[in-house]
Image (cartoon, rainbow, N blue to C red):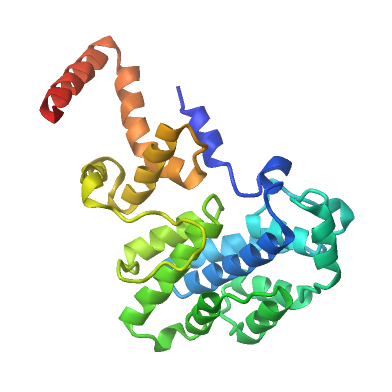
Length: 289
């Protein structure tokens, strides 16, 4: 058994097929396109994230963005929809409204492709002018997003406290708007490694973000022994969604993989190990009573 089902779940992304994009409006695609670019701009400030940024940008760059690609990045597909024709917009939630918005939206595609090519080659251009233009074209009015943009493009001048505020705001936005995307894992991983998430920053996102760990759920903390401390919040989300019978985003599946792998090792080792596992489980149940 090679956990094939888990591998398949890991490959799920925000724009993985026609059904997954049917819940998105044209405005959603515009906003998520911009947020993904903010994440890339932030990550390129981290030396150990260089390869992630390069690979993602390289997979995103295309000539015309004329086809929906399940095997490309979410950012590629957001660009495809924002610059799309009637056939592309027909895949979205409200094709008629999408077409009306599309007529008044002219994405600076050449500038965007130049930016992606630059970061895919390891260059670090200052994208302020491009990002401001994108805010206007994509109707980005969220003041938090504009604040994030001003700061991530001026990263070297920020204090560590300010960096934590900015990264936390971007994490909130990503969890609310890009929860099942292909970029959220990298953002959360590098933010965790550098301790750049703060509990004191207010979450202004209208959509519910990942909840903070509460005293009532303190037992989740012990999952760190199985999945690592950086994955605790994702595992909590996994268990909550599983209990509710809801779909589970790929980043939560990945976070839970070490625990599932441990169980799989026990099962594959044979009946004797399964019996020992059940014995330990029964003892644990008695302790919890």
